[in-house]
Amino acid sequence: MRTTVNIDAELLAAAKLQAARTHQTIGSVIEDALRRALQQHDESRAAVTLPEFRYAGGLRDGVDLLDRDAMGGLLGESSR
Image (tube, rainbow, N blue to C red; front, side):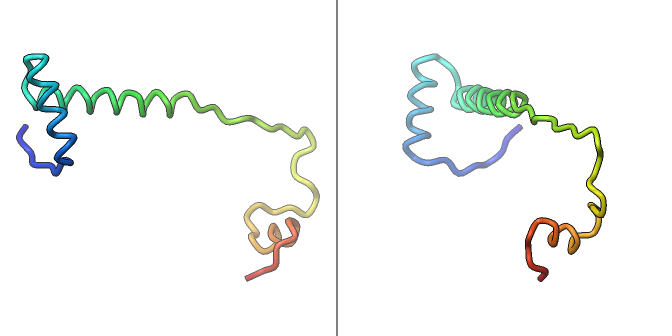
């Protein structure tokens, strides 16, 4: 697909040099670089695991997670 993007002049020059060295088109060099960047981004997101906290007793008496003002009071925050 044909599209237009703005690329930093030095970055474009480096990509053109890479294309010439590897006998590829500039489009192929940019596609490969973008694929690698997106794959690294996906892999870094997949590596994140969140801890689980379990409390057998459930919520403390008087705690209503849907009542923002009450939760603020329990946490020592002043209401807005």
